Image (cartoon, rainbow, N blue to C red; front, side, top):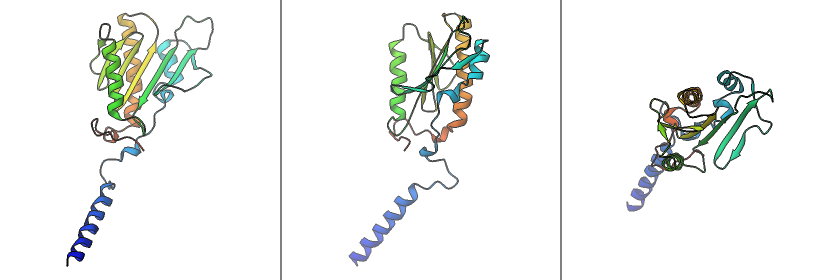
Amino acid sequence: MKKLFSILVCLGLTASLASCGCSKGGAPKVSEAEIVSPDMLITAEDATSVAGTALNMTAEGVHIDGSFRTVDFVPTDTNSSAYPISVSIEQFSDSLSVSQVWADYENHRLSRVGDAQLITGVGEDCYVSYPYINVYARGCYLKISGGSGDNEAQRDMLINLANRALLVLNEKIPADAVPAMDSGNTIK
């Protein structure tokens, strides 16, 4: 009797564990979140539109900068006075939890507390610390720079770039594909 009971308990546990990974009609699995490249967030056409002059991706293309993937757009006319636009993304992954991405974002903000301008309505959290706008959204940390200066026009241009990037990010990573911050789950 004890042996039969033990077998039934084991079968029950096995069935319940196996069903945990299923998501018929429910939220997508974390692994379904797409890895987003920075040149998807801001294209050369987007950069050109914002800069008002033709910009192209550098020959280096998308490159790794620590835990960020970065792309730079530079003027096609070498005599142009236009500034390059740089777009970087740090995204949760199989080796980087959402909590760590948030910690990186927050640590950078705290290190710039003297010159950081909080921006509302952009991503889940956002601040400008020239020359960058820094955005946390969907388990990702975006850093975008372009132009120069520290005036209202510069801030508005950075916000415009961030909003363009967030349209793509929100499309590529559904909110329910982002693991809870304290869970430590990562994309596999």
